Amino acid sequence: MPTLFEKIIAGDLPANIVFRDDRVTAFLDIRPAAPVHILIVPNKVIATANDVADEDEALIGHMFILARDLARANGIDADGYRLVVNCNAHGGQEVYHLHMHLLGGKPLGPMVLRK
Ligand code: 5GP
Image (cartoon, rainbow, N blue to C red; front, side, top):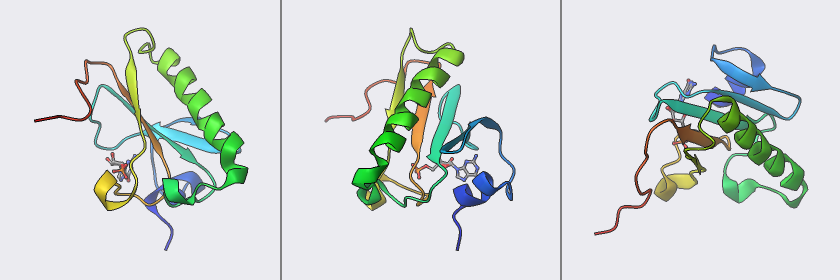
C-alpha cells in the first residue's frame, strides 16, 4: 500500500506543492500547526528515520538545505523556525514515509515541556 506521501509525490493525491526536484518534494501540511508548516519529503520511500541508509547522506543533507531555503523564501529565517522529524510511535509519527516538518511564523515555545 503506498503511503499518502507516495501518492502526493506521484501526483495521484492533490497537495499544495511548493518545491519539487528529482530527489525531494515539499508541500504544505494539510493541518498546519503554525503559519508556515511545510513538509519536506524524499521522493524515495524511506519509512522512518531508522531506515535512513548510509547512502542517503547526501539526500538528507539536501532536505536540510531545502529547509534553509524555504525558511528564507517564507521570511521566517531571521525570527527562527523549527525542524522536526518524528519517528515511530513514541515520536508521534503518523505517516510512514520520512519527512521533515518546517514550522514557523510565530513563537513556537519550548518543544519539550518539562514539569
Ligand atoms: P507525522 O506525525 O507523521 O510527523 O506528520 C504527518 C503530517 O502529515 C501531519 O502534520 C499531517 O497533518 C500531515 N498530513 C497527513 N495527511 C496529509 C495529506 O493528505 N496531505 C498533506 N498535505 N498533509 C498531510
